[in-house]
Length: 152
Image (cartoon, rainbow, N blue to C red; front, side, top):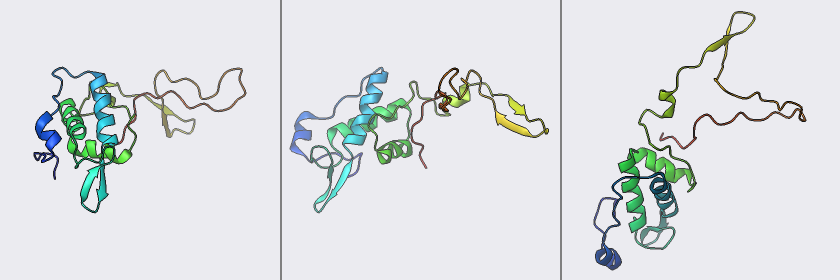
């Protein structure tokens, strides 16, 4: 059964589809990501079934999660990348911008090395990699934007 087809499961026929909320909130998007990842397909001899509840794939929650993520602006490839990633707690930016959150930031200046070669890009507002007065262990700079799987 494909994602867009009508289910023949008696429960689905009685209960119908779960409605997509009219104004999407960040909580709706987080729940939708969990729904598509946790209720992903698992192969069985009789065909694909929901990994979580054993219903025919796609189950009601998986279909709802896909519809919410599509309403949020993700395409099918990005939703499939979320499912392949397998982390139900992955962060999807809200509001989702098709070009990504990096397009809204101004470009960072490129620093010049003493030899005249272009060096690394200096990100504005990034803390130094070593704690002052600490043990001297390197510390990763804070994340400048959320990371989530890219569709390939």
